[in-house]
Image 1 (cartoon, rainbow, N blue to C red):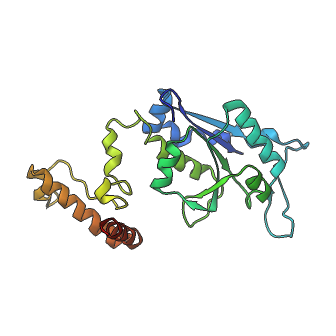
Image 2 (image 1 turned 45 degrees about the vertical axis):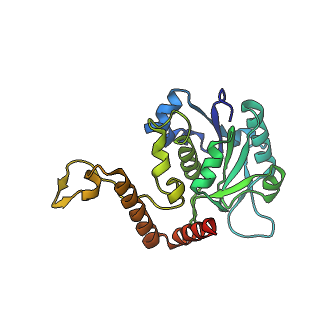
Image 3 (image 1 turned 30 degrees about the vertical axis):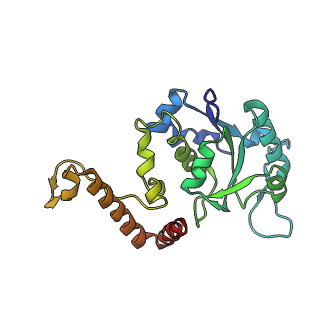
Length: 247
């Protein structure tokens, strides 16, 4: 992304009134108000050509539910890009897509602009996915009623990585999935603040020792312990990564 450009997210949805929604609050909303990024909500139904503005139809081959029409979606995508500029990455929020993780978030935050298609009903016609070369991205192994919530989650994850959004740029270096080079891929270590003793529980002595190296090692050990216990899949990748690096 060039220094002068503004990161942009264009959301195609049947419910544009949902936006900015949560993206208009807290840090993303503040950054949006300050012009650090841009959000465009496009109503897919505006591109329907039938009398009743139909955006879906019955699936070929039978089955329950309705499928969003490729002609309407293609027109919506082209209309959005004509108005807001070509998108660097075009994404369809889909439960069968690549699972969103911090690595992908960093890629998308570094892109010039995103176009996010929010599906509804049983999904969208495969032909528009192929024709527009849409990347399919999922929040995880579960199904939502539509892509709007997933789009908001993806955008918020990206926005917080943009320059100037967080007060301290180092904040994102030591959180889950983004711990520095030595702890890459681990879940985050525990945090403590005042009061030093609360409800019979004291802050770990090492954190008030002032010994930075001991604190670093303690945090590393805690991150490894938590990851091994809660996400053995991540821990296995972490161990394998260290092994490969040492060979």
